[in-house]
Image 1 (tube, helix red, strand yellow):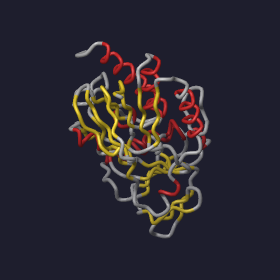
Image 2: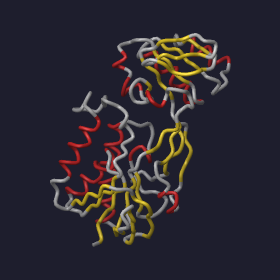
Image 3: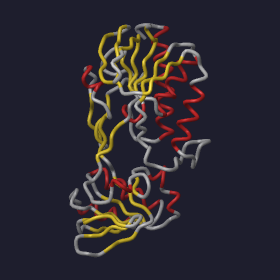
Image 4: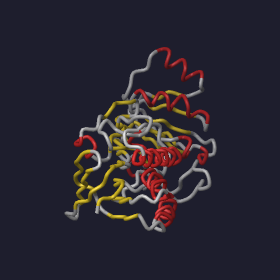
Length: 296
């Protein structure tokens, strides 16, 4: 069969988009590899009605609600190829099957490139975070460390004193101007330029001089890029931003390839569950309108 829409990526943005289409009684195939970006976190915060919930529970409940719609097909697996043109797209999966659709939506999210610091990746989502709105409150105004990765880290260091006493550990990732240093001082942020050797404990930073700084939590600005190369292989344009890379989309969430759409972390910044859900809902509605009004 030919679906109205194939959604590649069944996390928050993808499911939110699918919900709008299903409620318009459109046929939707979701292809999902089960790799939610926030799978390392135990709690999700800042999402209205689900504040503090387990992210996996939020995703499971959403999927169960979608499965109640008879025009949904859900495929657990990885999309390995995508091609085609308007009204005639094909997506291949890891099982060797090929699926047809009139429109294609990428909601695969992004992958995070983390600083190459011993002990950091094991603490990602538990005591090392990227979003203060998602995890800052739970630190209870305790000491916060910001690990530098590039220019975006300065913004983090200037913002995070809202949540607790902040120390900016540049770790050789960026050079600060006199104006930068004055602004950090004005915000009350301490500056540590000794390189980091490793992380210990929950959120202890061991410096190369042997000293240890203990924090309630750490933040770092990961560098993001699309979690899959499929959109780029189809010809979708990618743009650089302060956080990394994302797909170029119109206000209607269509990429530079007609009939191919993108939403969620893959196609907007900044990132959170709330923003991904909102972006997905908008994308789903816009795809439906494009199906009803071709050429819109």
